[in-house]
Image 1 (cartoon, rainbow, N blue to C red):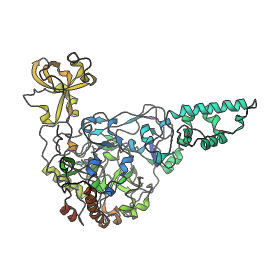
Image 2: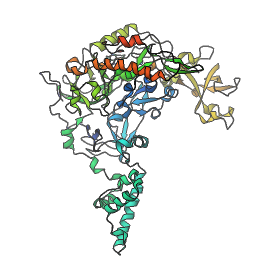
Image 3: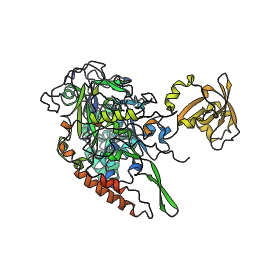
Image 4: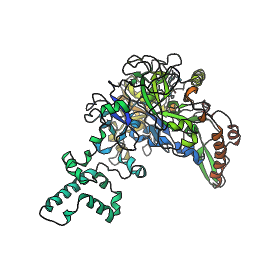
Length: 634
Ligand SMILES: C[S@@+](CC[C@H](N)C(=O)[O-])C[C@H]1O[C@@H](n2cnc3c(N)ncnc32)[C@H](O)[C@@H]1O
């Protein structure tokens, strides 16, 4: 990739990839898009692959989009990439009361494909940390979930594809896209069938009848006589060609059938791949104390060189990321329903801050390359910029209106981040997010009011031995958005052996009295526990959890703004609001239709606001910061 002097923004010049440790290139699974490959030197067993990356929650997309037209909810491309929230310990504190929550994992979690039989990386989990001071204007503007990283479970040779485990459920729910691909349990059964077949061939020497059939005939007979086999994952683990059977069995069985095919030639990767590991994670941004974490150069990158490739997940209409407060509407005489309050304050899902957009367009483009989500802004010291990548798979979209590709389920567009000047190893990678972003940030800094009291539980738990615990009378912890928990091992004796509480690690509790020498009297705040029950607890029994809806990134005051795509590279055809304005008018009609069978619903669509949206800049580049989300009733 390079930035040419004449201002042509496409990437083209040949890179020096001789030190590249990880490549992004077409996956060895046909029609499965891009994949990640071990580069020069391969990856040793237990080594970290790339570096720890940020992950970003989506909260209740269904709820917040339910009153919008069906068009709004079509094929949300992130759905193909998100991970279930239960994958990440610590997420449950804020997601268990929600209707749905998923996580965007823009690094390896999106870039590597899954082949369950050959999986060669292990998820080492994620850490939680605010990344700024709790009173900083940046608190809640970036994700506290960071350092998700993976290690190799075996030596991955040069050119070997990196395979992760998406879990069988992913493939079971995508039969239309991928067919009946084998699951790990399919392969031993397939191996047994191959051995049975060889046994038959062996009997054949002594002139048995059945064994005169060739493998290919047998395979076809199975399909013809029992169509149910077509849906068999075992069948799909078997070779269709008899000449391969011997080799497959000699090479460890059907599990490894595609192992060789999943290895690319390094010369081919140099030619067709792009280097992904020129950047690494920086703990705190060197640019601003409010910016959170950042990305650093992993090695020297010459001016014009590729910093990192970034395939883009498109969102045709940024309104799909809007979040509303809850309001109750009357459905019928005695029925009511909680719906998003379209007339009240709004904000956006946190992912907005990790996506690129343009003031004259509804389109958002969210990069998913390795650590690209960590690249911070500087209007003065930017050393990197985005350009359209030559590697992008749907170049033609640059000339098509958004509506024509918005529902496509492929990340067809791509940026390359390229160096504007020589970048030394360990220098922070910085781009210019644009004037509108800078202005919005400056305004946010001026208006920001630090939140009173709340420090996230995951921060407090890092320094439990420095904390002076308070009694309920001094100030309930719930006033600060957190809850004190007592580890159950210190209270076992007080519960009947059949008690449900013993199945948990901890119980909600409150300190009644400080006894000195790190000893406290506590009461238990759990349903079904006697109010008068008092227990003595040592300080190391305590830790905190966050109450739902309290974390900074959930606050309607947290900063939200997309990064801006420079005007000189933004296609005019995406700027036209005409198509979207038509859609907005249409969506209002649709909303009314949608709700028409709901009986006596109150009117909740703000007709005035929708009408004025015509020919306006997309709503919400700056969000309304007048209220925080209400806690649901206990
Ligand atoms: C793409 S993310 C960058 C990664 C982010 N620092 C993190 O820790 O996840 C963009 C967000 O980072 C923060 N940020 C980046 N550069 C900044 C700067 N120069 N000043 C303040 N905040 C910045 C803002 O919250 C912005 O919305």
